[in-house]
Length: 259
Length: 311
Image 1 (cartoon, one colour):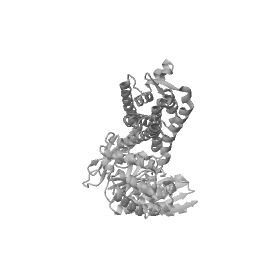
Image 2 (cartoon, helix red, strand yellow):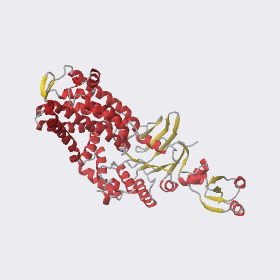
Image 3 (cartoon, chains in turn purple, cyan):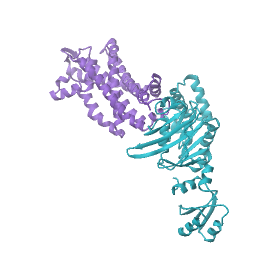
Image 4 (cartoon, chains in turn purple, blue):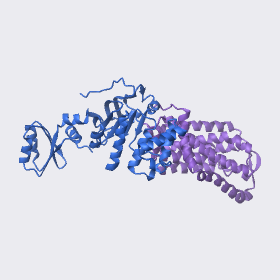
């Protein structure tokens, strides 16, 4: 089987299958990315904001809600794309055998892989966009900011989707997906400048948090508040990580399907 | 020396040539060659672990051969699997139907992978559901289907593209006798429509009923091949005797005397019964606890060739 051959139709056809499944339960699927950020914004907006007040970001004072809104978008992107690439792809690969069924059709491994990856990224985009719309409705992010942030959300979705697929190809039991979640996703979620500026962390933790990809994504999504001086390095870092995890995911999943 | 038919001028025939597969240092398929012609059912018969599923995997590109190749007409599967699979139908051992979709949707969405969409796809799905007698179950979810219905749906899925050749990997394993009979009718219909079929099975009756030719496999190697009746006649003869309660040495002596063979079988022994000999009378005279005379079958062929019962 030619590993690298792919046609746009083949990739679309796999993506289309996942989209049709999603469409069946779209209301349930739309709820988490809409309600979660609303809950967080209510909790932090009415709960923490009066205590925290304004915080300094990129040398200027910013309201706490405006500070966390872009991070909420990044979190939506992270969770939805990673979980789709991790859990859902693992189930399709090991329990439902969907990948195996698709490979009895005139589809190549690459088409099935890319279809799954792009679907994971699509879920990240949906979550990020819906969260962004909540932020826009709340007056925390302008519609133009959201529109211009879509390419960044796509990059983040592709990266975290590839990480999810790498996880799906690496673990042997579904419970083992918790390992990267507890060792990688949760620490990113808490340390990467989501709820507080990373500068308040001790130097070692600050350095570790800065190289984690979510930090770069959050910083870039805060471009309307000001960019880091090394923002282009952050962009390159996300692209490089995406390519690395994409390659690792292919290497891990291919042997599951072509013996 | 087995005869290997690997050259054909038929542009729709499937040719497997010198297939060899090893995992690590362990060979699981060794030097297997065959051709499947249109309208022919070729059976791969062997016990679990004989390499049947690995061979099927190599035929459609799910398993990369260590050596050898597969061609469908002029298309080489190993270098252009996608094009080859557009002309193949594949029924794998596992029911990998899509639990997220209904019966109808399973076929409709699979048709999409063949660029069959819209009204044409819905019409084709309707035809297929009628063909496999699932019209009345079109709206059901997959978990509402019986085992036999699921197998028929997987077969329907494999036929979406009007394939030249269909691979059926142990398609009736776990089905009740009625469901097996139902499935057999569909295989016979495929053959009558001119479709080439490769059937792997460890059921003797299935192989004998459906297959035009058989490859007998053991430990990844072809140990004999031919039409079922020819294999039985050539290897065993017309009749066999199952016997219990007689000393093995005595039976072996009788077998040698009448130039036939004797193998342990169940709780007794099995002897091929050559025509025009008084062996039967000798066996009756030995006063066995049980003595059964019957027509030989493929299980006896396998027992003769390997000394083992097919499981």
